[in-house]
Image (cartoon, rainbow, N blue to C red; front, side, top):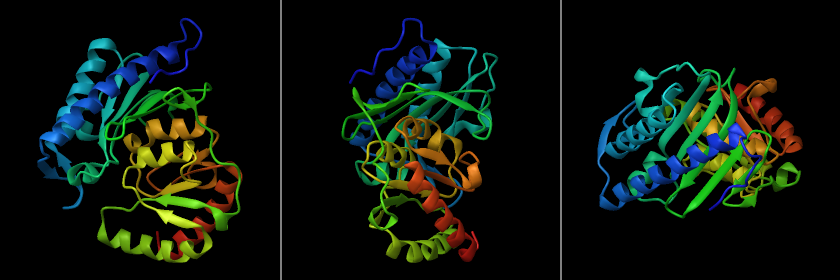
Length: 281
């Protein structure tokens, strides 16, 4: 699936080409390991927050591939945060080797490899995303974007859905691994659900963001996102015309992330902010 060509020597297009080629190969490796059978390697923040041996293998492949191509860049990966590197080039690669690990474990075809490259350190509050790629090998979809040059599914340009009334909006979300936080999030949804068309929960943040970009959802919001969860997907959604951010004009952080057509985003943000306060989130 080709990506749109840019001017000769465009550095962001070159970065995207590298991200895409490595992400596609990494996704093929993840799919191969899925077919062979998945083994849980460990739990992280809770028993539900798992990492598989494939997560570690895929991240190691991505990291070594990037190091070989761009040895001076920084790196932040979900499975190796303790060995994140700042680099000396001013660029940092932000990687989720298998986003949607529980889906991956159960054989649900909604998982992905996510690779983004940002200008600056691996901090969503200060970085500037340059290029990103999200690959779902289970159904063969490759989402890409570069800064100020649009977002694509394969070679098809992506655009968010036009503004709609909140009552007609299909809204996606996700839940925390903490049982206590999930209970509070359930209270939020119980009050939001009557106000929207319906709710979806796919369990893979990067795909949620890409699905907003592709018009498969009208909006997506979540609390607890990590930098690797949204680095590539947020750029893809933004380049498709979505407002992507946290509360009150802030960037996406662990506190909150929202993506939607701008008018709908403003309406949904106000309602969710009130519901979060009521639920103690």
